[in-house]
Amino acid sequence: MTSSQILLLVLGGGLFLVITVIIAIGDGGSLKSFKNKPVGNGQHGTARFATKNEIAKTYK
Image 1 (cartoon, one colour):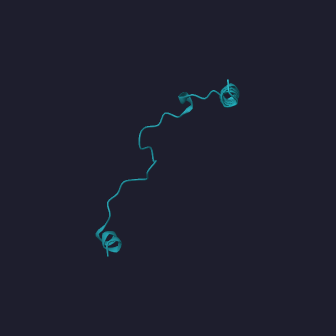
Image 2: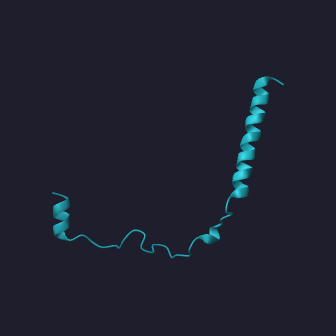
Image 3: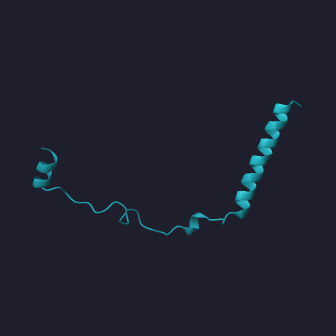
């Protein structure tokens, strides 16, 4: 084996070890921790139509 191959194996093993440690100490969250909300539950404000005055002010 060449030194570059050994270096690649060591870096790959180190990365694998780091990912394994992160998974092990993580809180193990899942999608069940999200609240069950209906779509559009106040996320984008309320729908309304512009008045003629607002249209004239916007598009001069």
